[in-house]
Image (cartoon, rainbow, N blue to C red; front, side):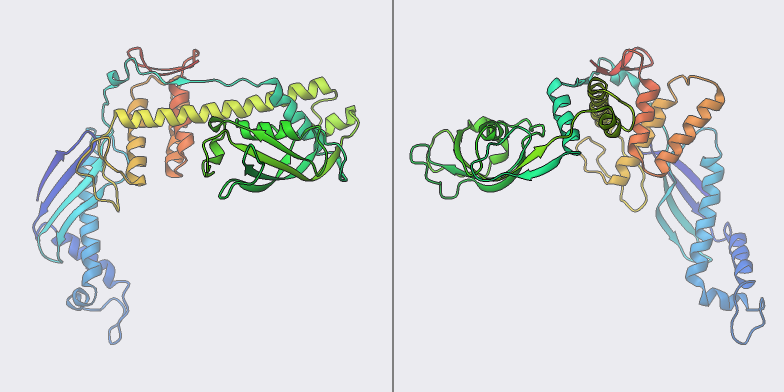
Length: 407
Protein backbone atom coordinates (compact mmCIF):
# COMPACT_ATOMS: atom_id res chain seq x y z
CA UNK A 1 0.00 0.00 0.00
CA UNK A 2 1.14 3.53 -0.78
CA UNK A 3 -0.20 6.72 0.80
CA UNK A 4 0.57 10.41 0.40
CA UNK A 5 -0.90 13.49 2.10
CA UNK A 6 -0.99 16.74 0.10
CA UNK A 7 -1.92 20.21 1.34
CA UNK A 8 -4.06 21.78 -1.38
CA UNK A 9 -4.99 25.00 0.45
CA UNK A 10 -4.80 26.59 3.91
CA UNK A 11 -7.19 24.03 5.36
CA UNK A 12 -7.91 21.67 2.48
CA UNK A 13 -5.82 18.46 2.49
CA UNK A 14 -5.97 15.30 0.40
CA UNK A 15 -4.96 11.78 1.38
CA UNK A 16 -4.08 9.63 -1.65
CA UNK A 17 -4.36 5.87 -1.13
CA UNK A 18 -3.14 3.17 -3.51
CA UNK A 19 -3.57 -0.46 -2.46
CA UNK A 20 -3.28 -3.83 -4.19
CA UNK A 21 -5.86 -6.61 -4.08
CA UNK A 22 -3.53 -8.46 -1.68
CA UNK A 23 -3.65 -5.47 0.71
CA UNK A 24 -7.42 -5.82 0.87
CA UNK A 25 -7.62 -9.63 0.93
CA UNK A 26 -8.16 -9.85 4.68
CA UNK A 27 -10.85 -7.14 4.52
CA UNK A 28 -12.69 -9.09 1.81
CA UNK A 29 -12.54 -12.29 3.92
CA UNK A 30 -13.93 -10.48 6.99
CA UNK A 31 -16.74 -8.93 4.96
CA UNK A 32 -17.68 -12.32 3.48
CA UNK A 33 -17.63 -13.93 6.92
CA UNK A 34 -19.93 -11.25 8.36
CA UNK A 35 -22.29 -11.50 5.40
CA UNK A 36 -22.32 -15.30 5.45
CA UNK A 37 -23.59 -15.32 9.04
CA UNK A 38 -26.57 -13.10 8.27
CA UNK A 39 -27.73 -14.12 4.78
CA UNK A 40 -30.49 -16.68 4.26
CA UNK A 41 -30.81 -18.16 0.75
CA UNK A 42 -33.16 -20.84 -0.47
CA UNK A 43 -31.44 -24.23 -0.79
CA UNK A 44 -28.74 -23.46 1.78
CA UNK A 45 -28.61 -23.82 5.54
CA UNK A 46 -28.09 -20.57 7.48
CA UNK A 47 -24.38 -19.70 7.46
CA UNK A 48 -23.54 -22.19 4.70
CA UNK A 49 -23.98 -20.07 1.56
CA UNK A 50 -20.79 -20.50 -0.57
CA UNK A 51 -18.53 -17.40 -0.62
CA UNK A 52 -18.35 -17.56 -4.44
CA UNK A 53 -22.14 -17.18 -4.63
CA UNK A 54 -22.13 -14.35 -2.11
CA UNK A 55 -19.58 -12.47 -4.27
CA UNK A 56 -21.93 -12.71 -7.26
CA UNK A 57 -25.19 -11.86 -5.54
CA UNK A 58 -23.85 -9.17 -3.17
CA UNK A 59 -20.95 -7.83 -5.22
CA UNK A 60 -22.01 -4.18 -5.00
CA UNK A 61 -22.66 -4.31 -1.25
CA UNK A 62 -19.36 -6.09 -0.57
CA UNK A 63 -17.43 -3.63 -2.73
CA UNK A 64 -18.86 -0.65 -0.81
CA UNK A 65 -18.37 -2.28 2.59
CA UNK A 66 -14.75 -3.30 1.96
CA UNK A 67 -13.68 0.03 0.42
CA UNK A 68 -15.42 2.15 3.08
CA UNK A 69 -13.94 0.20 5.98
CA UNK A 70 -10.45 0.10 4.44
CA UNK A 71 -10.41 3.84 3.72
CA UNK A 72 -11.74 4.62 7.20
CA UNK A 73 -9.04 2.53 8.86
CA UNK A 74 -6.25 4.10 6.79
CA UNK A 75 -7.57 7.63 7.47
CA UNK A 76 -7.89 6.93 11.20
CA UNK A 77 -4.33 5.59 11.45
CA UNK A 78 -2.59 8.24 9.32
CA UNK A 79 -4.68 11.35 10.03
CA UNK A 80 -7.38 11.18 12.72
CA UNK A 81 -5.16 9.65 15.40
CA UNK A 82 -2.04 11.52 14.39
CA UNK A 83 -0.96 14.42 16.60
CA UNK A 84 -0.05 16.43 13.52
CA UNK A 85 -3.59 17.48 12.56
CA UNK A 86 -6.48 19.29 14.29
CA UNK A 87 -9.44 18.24 12.17
CA UNK A 88 -12.78 19.92 11.50
CA UNK A 89 -15.70 18.01 10.03
CA UNK A 90 -15.65 14.56 8.44
CA UNK A 91 -13.48 13.43 5.55
CA UNK A 92 -14.89 13.30 2.01
CA UNK A 93 -14.05 10.53 -0.46
CA UNK A 94 -13.34 12.69 -3.51
CA UNK A 95 -12.62 9.81 -5.89
CA UNK A 96 -12.66 6.02 -5.65
CA UNK A 97 -11.66 3.33 -8.16
CA UNK A 98 -12.27 -0.13 -6.73
CA UNK A 99 -13.90 -3.39 -7.76
CA UNK A 100 -14.08 -6.38 -5.42
CA UNK A 101 -10.78 -8.34 -5.31
CA UNK A 102 -9.06 -5.72 -7.50
CA UNK A 103 -6.61 -2.90 -6.75
CA UNK A 104 -7.89 0.23 -5.02
CA UNK A 105 -7.12 3.90 -5.72
CA UNK A 106 -8.79 6.64 -3.69
CA UNK A 107 -8.49 10.34 -2.84
CA UNK A 108 -9.84 11.47 0.52
CA UNK A 109 -10.25 15.18 1.24
CA UNK A 110 -10.28 16.54 4.79
CA UNK A 111 -10.12 19.89 6.60
CA UNK A 112 -7.40 20.89 9.05
CA UNK A 113 -7.78 23.79 11.47
CA UNK A 114 -4.85 26.02 10.44
CA UNK A 115 -2.80 28.59 12.31
CA UNK A 116 -4.45 31.59 10.64
CA UNK A 117 -2.54 34.85 10.44
CA UNK A 118 -4.15 37.10 13.03
CA UNK A 119 -2.02 40.02 11.87
CA UNK A 120 -4.63 40.42 9.14
CA UNK A 121 -6.85 41.86 11.85
CA UNK A 122 -4.46 44.68 12.64
CA UNK A 123 -6.30 48.01 12.57
CA UNK A 124 -9.49 46.25 11.53
CA UNK A 125 -12.46 48.08 13.05
CA UNK A 126 -16.20 47.78 12.56
CA UNK A 127 -18.19 50.65 14.01
CA UNK A 128 -21.39 49.54 15.72
CA UNK A 129 -23.94 52.24 16.52
CA UNK A 130 -25.62 51.75 19.89
CA UNK A 131 -29.22 53.02 19.68
CA UNK A 132 -30.77 54.63 22.75
CA UNK A 133 -34.46 54.72 23.58
CA UNK A 134 -36.21 57.94 22.56
CA UNK A 135 -39.06 59.47 24.62
CA UNK A 136 -41.46 59.21 21.68
CA UNK A 137 -40.79 55.47 21.46
CA UNK A 138 -41.77 55.06 25.09
CA UNK A 139 -44.88 57.20 24.52
CA UNK A 140 -45.94 55.13 21.52
CA UNK A 141 -45.46 51.85 23.41
CA UNK A 142 -47.24 53.26 26.46
CA UNK A 143 -50.34 54.19 24.48
CA UNK A 144 -50.22 50.93 22.55
CA UNK A 145 -50.30 48.98 25.82
CA UNK A 146 -53.10 51.19 27.17
CA UNK A 147 -55.09 50.68 23.98
CA UNK A 148 -54.88 46.91 24.47
CA UNK A 149 -57.15 47.39 27.52
CA UNK A 150 -59.40 49.98 25.88
CA UNK A 151 -62.85 49.76 24.33
CA UNK A 152 -63.83 50.96 20.83
CA UNK A 153 -66.66 53.20 19.67
CA UNK A 154 -67.40 53.72 15.97
CA UNK A 155 -67.46 57.42 15.09
CA UNK A 156 -70.19 58.88 12.92
CA UNK A 157 -69.72 61.23 9.97
CA UNK A 158 -68.68 64.67 11.18
CA UNK A 159 -67.24 63.47 14.51
CA UNK A 160 -63.72 64.60 15.40
CA UNK A 161 -60.70 62.26 15.24
CA UNK A 162 -58.13 62.13 18.07
CA UNK A 163 -54.50 60.96 18.11
CA UNK A 164 -55.50 57.63 19.69
CA UNK A 165 -58.08 56.55 17.12
CA UNK A 166 -57.94 54.00 14.31
CA UNK A 167 -58.98 55.20 10.85
CA UNK A 168 -59.64 53.74 7.40
CA UNK A 169 -58.44 56.04 4.62
CA UNK A 170 -58.54 56.07 0.83
CA UNK A 171 -55.34 57.63 -0.53
CA UNK A 172 -54.81 58.72 -4.14
CA UNK A 173 -52.14 60.75 -5.93
CA UNK A 174 -53.76 63.83 -7.48
CA UNK A 175 -52.91 66.88 -9.57
CA UNK A 176 -51.92 69.72 -7.23
CA UNK A 177 -53.93 72.37 -9.11
CA UNK A 178 -57.09 70.56 -10.14
CA UNK A 179 -57.29 67.90 -7.43
CA UNK A 180 -58.05 65.29 -10.08
CA UNK A 181 -56.67 61.79 -9.60
CA UNK A 182 -53.65 60.90 -11.72
CA UNK A 183 -53.94 57.99 -14.13
CA UNK A 184 -51.53 55.25 -13.08
CA UNK A 185 -50.82 57.08 -9.84
CA UNK A 186 -50.82 55.86 -6.25
CA UNK A 187 -54.17 54.45 -5.11
CA UNK A 188 -54.65 52.51 -1.91
CA UNK A 189 -57.06 52.01 0.99
CA UNK A 190 -55.22 51.64 4.28
CA UNK A 191 -55.98 51.19 7.98
CA UNK A 192 -53.97 53.55 10.17
CA UNK A 193 -53.36 53.32 13.91
CA UNK A 194 -52.72 56.94 14.78
CA UNK A 195 -51.18 55.95 18.11
CA UNK A 196 -48.56 53.59 16.67
CA UNK A 197 -45.00 54.80 16.12
CA UNK A 198 -44.52 55.88 12.51
CA UNK A 199 -41.80 54.30 10.37
CA UNK A 200 -38.98 56.60 9.30
CA UNK A 201 -41.08 57.77 6.38
CA UNK A 202 -42.35 61.32 5.77
CA UNK A 203 -45.33 60.05 3.81
CA UNK A 204 -46.79 58.14 6.78
CA UNK A 205 -45.99 60.94 9.19
CA UNK A 206 -47.67 63.56 6.99
CA UNK A 207 -50.82 61.45 6.65
CA UNK A 208 -51.11 61.05 10.43
CA UNK A 209 -50.50 64.74 10.99
CA UNK A 210 -53.18 65.64 8.43
CA UNK A 211 -55.83 63.27 9.88
CA UNK A 212 -55.62 64.16 13.59
CA UNK A 213 -58.20 66.83 14.39
CA UNK A 214 -60.18 66.27 11.19
CA UNK A 215 -63.62 64.72 10.92
CA UNK A 216 -64.99 61.42 9.59
CA UNK A 217 -65.75 61.71 5.84
CA UNK A 218 -63.35 64.69 5.47
CA UNK A 219 -60.94 64.81 2.53
CA UNK A 220 -57.56 66.49 2.92
CA UNK A 221 -54.64 67.05 0.51
CA UNK A 222 -50.98 66.69 1.47
CA UNK A 223 -47.73 67.36 -0.37
CA UNK A 224 -44.62 65.30 0.27
CA UNK A 225 -41.23 65.61 -1.46
CA UNK A 226 -39.99 62.59 -3.48
CA UNK A 227 -37.06 61.97 -1.12
CA UNK A 228 -39.46 61.21 1.69
CA UNK A 229 -41.29 58.50 -0.21
CA UNK A 230 -39.12 55.37 -0.36
CA UNK A 231 -42.25 53.21 -0.20
CA UNK A 232 -43.82 54.86 -3.24
CA UNK A 233 -41.23 54.00 -5.87
CA UNK A 234 -43.94 52.54 -8.08
CA UNK A 235 -45.85 55.81 -8.42
CA UNK A 236 -45.94 57.06 -12.02
CA UNK A 237 -46.06 60.83 -12.14
CA UNK A 238 -47.41 62.29 -15.38
CA UNK A 239 -45.95 65.77 -14.83
CA UNK A 240 -42.85 66.97 -12.94
CA UNK A 241 -44.23 68.37 -9.66
CA UNK A 242 -44.20 67.84 -5.90
CA UNK A 243 -46.37 64.74 -5.33
CA UNK A 244 -49.79 65.62 -3.96
CA UNK A 245 -52.15 63.14 -2.35
CA UNK A 246 -55.82 63.14 -1.53
CA UNK A 247 -56.64 61.45 1.79
CA UNK A 248 -60.32 60.64 2.36
CA UNK A 249 -61.28 59.51 5.87
CA UNK A 250 -63.77 56.69 5.29
CA UNK A 251 -64.26 55.30 8.81
CA UNK A 252 -62.88 55.77 12.31
CA UNK A 253 -63.03 54.08 15.68
CA UNK A 254 -62.61 56.07 18.86
CA UNK A 255 -60.42 54.57 21.55
CA UNK A 256 -61.85 54.82 25.08
CA UNK A 257 -58.90 54.35 27.40
CA UNK A 258 -59.19 52.82 30.87
CA UNK A 259 -58.56 54.94 33.95
CA UNK A 260 -54.92 54.69 35.11
CA UNK A 261 -54.67 52.66 38.29
CA UNK A 262 -52.24 50.46 40.18
CA UNK A 263 -54.27 47.41 39.19
CA UNK A 264 -54.09 48.38 35.49
CA UNK A 265 -50.31 48.96 35.49
CA UNK A 266 -49.68 45.69 37.31
CA UNK A 267 -51.82 43.88 34.76
CA UNK A 268 -49.99 45.47 31.83
CA UNK A 269 -46.52 44.81 33.28
CA UNK A 270 -46.97 41.32 34.63
CA UNK A 271 -47.15 42.63 38.22
CA UNK A 272 -43.83 44.51 37.88
CA UNK A 273 -45.11 48.09 38.17
CA UNK A 274 -47.72 49.94 40.21
CA UNK A 275 -47.45 53.50 38.93
CA UNK A 276 -47.32 55.23 35.54
CA UNK A 277 -43.73 56.34 36.16
CA UNK A 278 -42.61 52.80 36.96
CA UNK A 279 -44.52 51.46 33.95
CA UNK A 280 -42.87 53.93 31.57
CA UNK A 281 -39.45 53.04 32.98
CA UNK A 282 -40.25 49.36 32.51
CA UNK A 283 -41.25 49.97 28.87
CA UNK A 284 -38.04 51.89 28.25
CA UNK A 285 -36.00 48.97 29.55
CA UNK A 286 -37.90 46.53 27.34
CA UNK A 287 -37.41 48.70 24.27
CA UNK A 288 -33.70 49.09 25.08
CA UNK A 289 -33.37 45.30 25.33
CA UNK A 290 -34.82 45.03 21.82
CA UNK A 291 -32.42 47.68 20.52
CA UNK A 292 -29.48 45.92 22.18
CA UNK A 293 -30.55 42.64 20.57
CA UNK A 294 -30.58 44.34 17.17
CA UNK A 295 -27.11 45.75 17.84
CA UNK A 296 -25.84 42.31 18.87
CA UNK A 297 -27.24 40.79 15.68
CA UNK A 298 -25.53 43.48 13.60
CA UNK A 299 -22.32 42.84 15.50
CA UNK A 300 -22.49 39.10 14.82
CA UNK A 301 -23.29 39.64 11.15
CA UNK A 302 -20.38 42.05 10.64
CA UNK A 303 -17.92 39.75 12.45
CA UNK A 304 -19.03 36.84 10.29
CA UNK A 305 -18.80 38.76 7.00
CA UNK A 306 -15.43 40.35 7.76
CA UNK A 307 -13.80 37.14 9.00
CA UNK A 308 -15.02 35.29 5.92
CA UNK A 309 -13.52 38.01 3.73
CA UNK A 310 -10.17 37.92 5.53
CA UNK A 311 -9.78 34.13 5.39
CA UNK A 312 -11.07 32.90 1.99
CA UNK A 313 -9.59 29.40 1.92
CA UNK A 314 -11.46 26.51 0.33
CA UNK A 315 -12.76 23.48 2.19
CA UNK A 316 -13.72 19.85 1.65
CA UNK A 317 -17.47 19.30 1.88
CA UNK A 318 -19.59 16.22 1.21
CA UNK A 319 -22.09 16.41 -1.66
CA UNK A 320 -20.34 19.43 -3.20
CA UNK A 321 -17.45 19.72 -5.62
CA UNK A 322 -14.63 21.77 -4.11
CA UNK A 323 -14.24 25.18 -5.71
CA UNK A 324 -11.21 25.52 -7.95
CA UNK A 325 -10.79 29.20 -7.11
CA UNK A 326 -10.54 30.01 -3.39
CA UNK A 327 -10.83 33.79 -4.00
CA UNK A 328 -13.38 35.87 -2.00
CA UNK A 329 -15.62 36.22 -5.05
CA UNK A 330 -16.06 32.47 -5.48
CA UNK A 331 -19.64 31.35 -5.02
CA UNK A 332 -19.83 28.82 -2.19
CA UNK A 333 -22.57 26.45 -1.15
CA UNK A 334 -24.10 26.86 2.31
CA UNK A 335 -22.27 23.70 3.43
CA UNK A 336 -18.94 25.17 2.34
CA UNK A 337 -19.65 28.49 4.06
CA UNK A 338 -20.60 26.78 7.29
CA UNK A 339 -17.57 24.48 7.36
CA UNK A 340 -15.20 27.36 6.55
CA UNK A 341 -16.76 29.47 9.29
CA UNK A 342 -16.44 26.64 11.84
CA UNK A 343 -12.76 26.26 10.90
CA UNK A 344 -12.16 30.00 11.34
CA UNK A 345 -13.83 29.99 14.76
CA UNK A 346 -11.73 27.06 15.97
CA UNK A 347 -8.56 28.57 14.49
CA UNK A 348 -9.11 31.83 16.35
CA UNK A 349 -10.28 30.09 19.50
CA UNK A 350 -7.14 27.96 19.83
CA UNK A 351 -4.98 31.10 19.73
CA UNK A 352 -6.83 32.91 22.52
CA UNK A 353 -6.07 32.03 26.13
CA UNK A 354 -9.06 30.39 27.80
CA UNK A 355 -10.34 32.13 30.92
CA UNK A 356 -11.20 29.90 33.86
CA UNK A 357 -10.17 26.33 34.54
CA UNK A 358 -10.00 23.34 32.21
CA UNK A 359 -13.52 22.29 33.15
CA UNK A 360 -14.90 25.65 32.02
CA UNK A 361 -12.96 25.42 28.76
CA UNK A 362 -14.32 21.93 28.12
CA UNK A 363 -17.88 23.13 28.79
CA UNK A 364 -17.39 26.03 26.37
CA UNK A 365 -16.12 23.72 23.67
CA UNK A 366 -19.06 21.37 24.20
CA UNK A 367 -21.47 24.28 23.65
CA UNK A 368 -19.75 25.20 20.41
CA UNK A 369 -19.71 21.58 19.25
CA UNK A 370 -23.46 21.29 19.84
CA UNK A 371 -24.07 24.62 18.10
CA UNK A 372 -22.11 23.47 15.05
CA UNK A 373 -23.95 20.17 15.01
CA UNK A 374 -27.33 21.90 15.17
CA UNK A 375 -26.18 24.63 12.77
CA UNK A 376 -27.12 27.37 15.20
CA UNK A 377 -24.93 30.05 13.66
CA UNK A 378 -25.84 32.77 16.18
CA UNK A 379 -24.69 30.61 19.11
CA UNK A 380 -21.35 30.08 17.40
CA UNK A 381 -21.02 33.80 16.70
CA UNK A 382 -21.94 34.62 20.28
CA UNK A 383 -19.23 32.25 21.47
CA UNK A 384 -16.55 33.90 19.34
CA UNK A 385 -17.57 37.45 20.23
CA UNK A 386 -18.08 36.53 23.88
CA UNK A 387 -14.65 34.90 24.15
CA UNK A 388 -12.80 37.76 22.52
CA UNK A 389 -14.66 40.92 23.49
CA UNK A 390 -13.09 43.05 26.20
CA UNK A 391 -14.63 45.30 28.82
CA UNK A 392 -14.31 48.22 26.38
CA UNK A 393 -16.47 46.26 23.93
CA UNK A 394 -13.67 45.84 21.42
CA UNK A 395 -12.91 42.45 19.94
CA UNK A 396 -9.23 42.22 20.89
CA UNK A 397 -7.15 39.34 19.65
CA UNK A 398 -3.55 38.38 20.58
CA UNK A 399 -0.94 40.93 19.57
CA UNK A 400 -3.30 43.89 20.19
CA UNK A 401 -5.14 43.20 16.94
CA UNK A 402 -8.61 44.75 17.04
CA UNK A 403 -11.35 43.41 14.81
CA UNK A 404 -14.20 45.65 15.81
CA UNK A 405 -15.11 48.48 18.12
CA UNK A 406 -18.52 49.20 19.57
CA UNK A 407 -19.06 52.84 20.37
